[in-house]
Image (tube, rainbow, N blue to C red; front, top):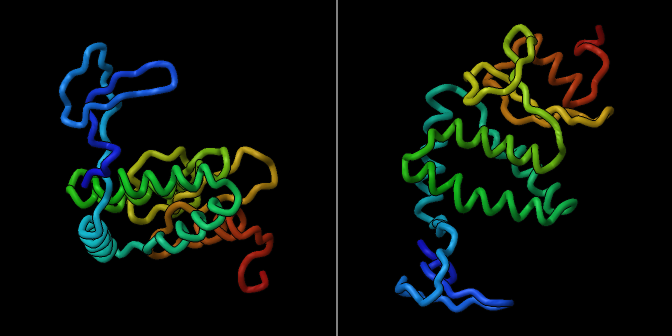
Length: 189
């Protein structure tokens, strides 16, 4: 689906103006317009959602969209420009690439979560295995991996990017400490 403003293929540019030839005919002195972007359709969203939900069921992974929505709401309030960038990526890259079969749904959504985290706070993304050992993020993660974005600034809490279906004890302790800020073990120990 193309928006009317994305159709031009060639344009004539001058100081403060551009004249577009919507049929793609070359104009004298025409410059190429940057690559056109595809907008998602309602059908694309339904198809991508179905593919993602099926992938979640197949591996028993948790659906991250709820905490991604929370992150989006925070971005909208705190940084409208970053919010618009996240929405644009969702509409122009995430959903169309999954619906077209160009991207594996779980990997694509995890990458979207990483983008949201990076737009929220500067830092680095890590993967935490079942033993609690962290390593630099190299996607896509395995289903048993906890994925966190660690802020560069001291005192900031880690942002959740991806949760395994079942947290190991070490992952639970890491999550409690870095994401929730708990300094005591569960169960009063």
